[in-house]
Length: 529
Image (cartoon, rainbow, N blue to C red; front, side, top):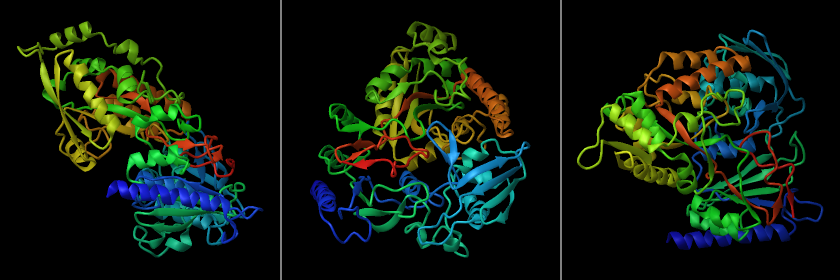
């Protein structure tokens, strides 16, 4: 039944795209001069649980929100900031006052004006409900509306990544949400924003449809209609993309060899925050309490081989804790190749000296390893790690589970020795990378699960939060990396891009154009062939 449905879906997608491109009329004003509607098709793997990422977490919600909503400040994949709904801003020298100068004449999709009142409502009511926004909202003392295009935000204390965090907050309309239950408001599934695309319809199990915003403030949108068919079978998504029936889709890494051979297809490597395949160690595990043992375990993992084989070459082996794109915060004195070489003789000697000789079976000890089964590239990494660590006498018991079980066993109950995960670097180190090293006494999910709480690391993390001066923040973050290399309980193995979308240029050119905001499509610059 699944395959029959998949084939039917592909046929629907192809028919839809073809019909839209050759038929005129019934376009509701969304047609070009020749009367042809320009349609863009992106396959999605499942029904979105929500379309408003301010109130619902998840990759699908973030993707749709990036097309429908705008942020006050934009941020690209390298962390560079640029004007969004705020065309200018000033942050006071003490970091406690932020003045936002908004664009004049911007309207919501329903025609209502976007004003400073919307900004005040979002910062005082909505931002605290978003994952990264909570830390920012906790420091907001209040928002003053000076006039319709000026808002002044005051803070109770300095928050280092204030601008980067603000750049992740989608503005939603006060006149739609005020006085309602924000989380259950029907607009979360029929969103109204100021972005380049407007919500049109959603059919569960079938598709989401967006329409061109004819009043978009940042240029003429080149697409009349964007269709997002739900295609749960990865092979069906791949077939549709290869056939030119969809313009963009996320493919299984195993499909990328075929992508490389097709001149019309490209795996995107930019436009998204960097992702990493990481290893996490439980500092309370009897075999892993010694930093020297943890260092030996990390050194035994062949990052290059993992990247080439487990990740199908879709990444770059790491040489440090931060990606090269974060040049301002990267500690170049930390070098994995120099500090943790895969020298099996040296690794075996270090494990002997640590008091773990090989037994009669050739093993020193066995570690329980957890990973999320659905992440095929992570499962493949765990399989390779098993053979690599056996070379130095360490056995691995691989335990793949669902994401919910992984979360409980790793973060809540600490029932693991090693774990492998795919995670995103995020918009700023303090809100992304640092959470894997800072103290986590409450055992929050998606944060340091090692049970190691180091004073030096925490002081560096706090220091980076306590100033908005990027140079000073960078020095604190470099200190954090130095100490992390001494303790070695969490580290990236590869900067991975295999989970990014693949695009087809058979119908649309310019899909790889640079974007000022991550996770967005270059709606105003790409062109239909």
